[in-house]
Image 1 (cartoon, rainbow, N blue to C red):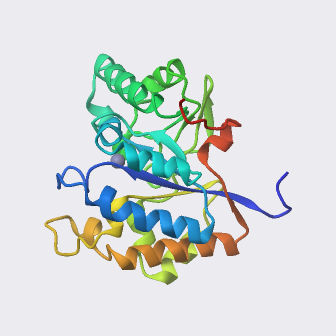
Image 2 (spheres, protein in one colour):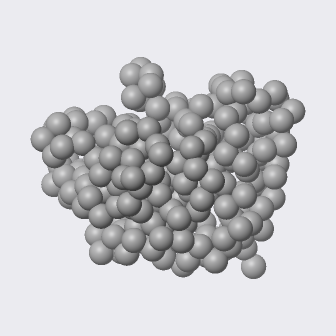
Length: 245
Ligand SMILES: [Zn+2]
């Protein structure tokens, strides 16, 4: 039962190489993820980490560290390809490969497409592979996006884009206080590495590093003051996650 007046909020993390397609490094995994895990532990927030199959094969210990900290691991494609540019056969290949990698590590039931782009016609593929939550739509791209269901898949849109959390406090906090439920925010681990001098788009690199950590902490506290209860996305489908034996 939810407490009267409480709302649901989800912190989600998209795990891939650093700021694709601009960089080919993995500093977010090795340097940013420990910072993020410490912050989530300090704030006692359970989160959902969407991990690419490629990342899980390169850094399995990171995936197990996320699971052992009590967070949910979801899927984020295999190679971080843009599903909007894939044929149905190639989309199936991506889903098949990510599921076989991540499914060997834990039960995976949540999915977010890279670049928050996932054609509706592909949603039945998620259902076929056992996914129960799809967080690939984005309210900031399609303001009409709402929680909906396709087959067994509950579609839960992301509320705001990741760089929004690094805005100045006043407009950011006003926006966070007015999100419709469930508030789904997302970050990338590379945002917690100082990339201010990297050759990146400004919205990717501004206030990265320690300022981004502080911004996420303040955002969590703003949502909590509004009465938010933090949940893993899988909770919206009433499933739990078991580590593979
Ligand atoms: Zn991504």
